[in-house]
Amino acid sequence: MAKSVWLLFAVAVLSVLAGAQDTRELGHSSEEADFIGSAAPVGSAPTCAQSPQVLRVPAPLIERAKTKARLIILLRESLFDDAKGIVNIAREKEIKKLVSKLKNSE
Image (cartoon, rainbow, N blue to C red; front, side, top):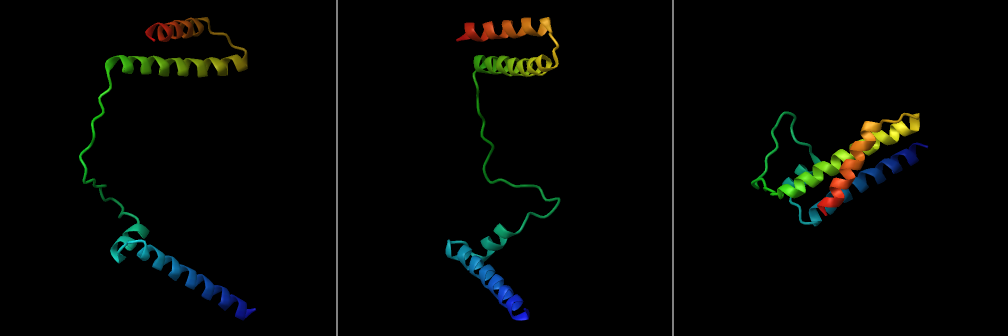
């Protein structure tokens, strides 16, 4: 029993060592391998060498996206209310209004 435990331990150690060598063979230096395996220190601010990219979206697309988001929220609420047997006429009218707005904007 003791021999099998030591054999299992030896196999585990060898597999860990083989894995560490594989990361170095992939082109990582020892510092990079240490960085890959370690987490960032607690409390340190993340740094980025690149400047943030700006994505400009045309106003009509923004309005359409807002309309779709509102419609999705209303449809979800309506679905839950339908499951409970609740009917909300004002919500149904708003859903129809948003759908017609989306159809006309195409």
